[in-house]
Each structure stands twice: as structure tokens, then as C-alpha cells.
Length: 317
View 1 (cartoon, rainbow, N blue to C red):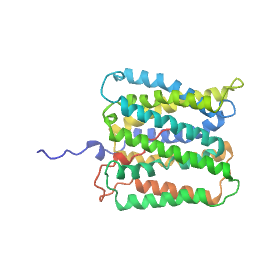
View 2: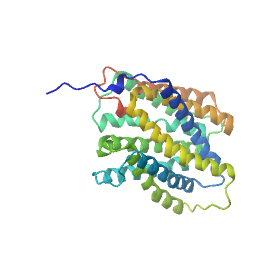
View 3: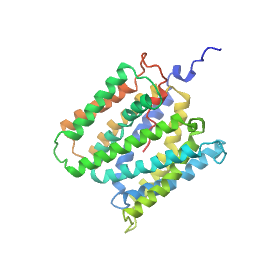
View 4: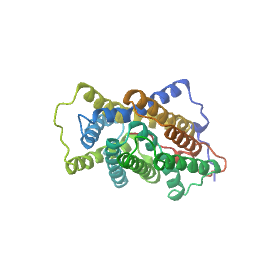
């Protein structure tokens, strides 16, 4: 039996270009929650999410076709792809509805609790052992979430807390989708195809949700809203997720993951200046706890026996 070969990407240092690209991706993902909030007065949440998926699907198809991806090849992935797609669609039902009630700054922090659920799920579902720093990180992140939700704060009522919980539920489904992608045949297909399953399946799910919520577009959206919708569909979903998958294939996942925790910081600061969100000291402390805990969860640990990729939060939304 031959000795296991080391993964060359794990030892490869991030180039200046990769670092610059990661910073750009984090800034994009942080602004995405703000973009959703800005469009809500013109386009209701479920219709906004459905239109976003409809616009992103051809972008994924074009990028994948140029790269030679065989989208319609029979490879036994349609069942896990459908399951991942259903969870993906319901995830955005929770996230977009939650943004109706809570602020963009709170949403971006709660959404990035997804690695917390990925780490727990990897331990329970994939049998991956966590190291001491990972368990400590989970405890710190949990304390931060509990502080942000449970402690009375100015301008936070039951509606805001409901929105917070919906965002956390969306983060949980995001993590579940990641585990399906890691634990099934989806891990063998091109990222455009794996993401294509999710985006395509989310369209009818979000359409049904829009019908059940009675959503309609009552007036012509403003040029700003139309531009932000195009930004979400073409750039955020169709392009940046593909760039992210390409980086993960080339570089160490644990090294890249450290950059993703800049996203909540960008989001909180951006929400303060653009949306004029009120930021209390308590919430600031909670945000720091969540980010610090998630950093420890994704920090390489010698006592963890499993590869670190499964603990990576495949960033989106």
C-alpha cells in the first residue's frame, strides 16, 4: 500500500493576487445583505430571491460551458443535488424574510454562524474529530450568539429577534447544504454543476413561497434596485461563488477561511454607514465573540484527525 500523498494546495502560500481576490470577495459578500435590504421597498423578498436565482443560472451555465463542464451528464448526482437545492431554496426563504425584520448588520453576523453548524455537523455526520481549539471556538461563538439574541438591547423588539432567528435558521440550512455537498457524490462534480443544482431548484421553491406570501411588484423598481438585482444575480451568485470554488481548489481551505471572517466586520461597518443601523456596545461585543470563535473553529489543529476542508464555510448569500 502506498503512503498517502500530501495535498500540495495545503502548503501553497497565498499569492498577492489570491489575497486581493479574497478581500474583494469578502467585501462583496458583506455588501450583499445591504443590497437585499435596499431593494426590499421595490421588490418583495421572495420575488427578489427568485429573480436573483433566475438571473444567476444562465451565468453559471455560460461559465461552466466555457470551462467544459458537462451539466447534463448522468453521474448519479441528481438526488443529492435535488436535496441540496431544496435546502438552498428554503434557506433563502428564511434569510430574505428575516431581513424584513432585522437589520443588515445583525443579519451578516448571524448568517456567518454557518461554520458553527458545519463544524458540529462534520463531527456528527462525517465523523470528523475536532481539536481543542475548534471546541473552544464553538463555545465562544455560541456565547456571542446567545449574547446578541438574549440580552435586551435598544431598538430590539420581538420582530427583530424573529428576524435574527430566521437568519440563524438560514445559516443552519446553509451548513446542511455544505454537508450534503461534502458527504455525497456532489463532491466529485464541477462547482458550477453543484451550484447549478441549488440555484435551479431554488427557483420553483422561491416562486411557491412568493405565491403563498401573496407577493407582487406594485410599481416599477428604481434604477438603483434594478442595478442591485443585477449585482446580486450576475456578480454575487453567478461569479463570486465560482471564483471562491476555484480558490478552494488551488489553495489551502484553512488559509482561505481566515479571510471569510472579515466579511461580518465589513458588513457591520457598511450597514452603519449605508443603512445607518444602530450599533450598541453589547452587539459589538457579541459580534467580536462570534468572529473570534469562528476563527478558532477554522484554525488548523494538530489534534484534529480529519482534513480541514469539511469545516470550511462555503461562503455565499
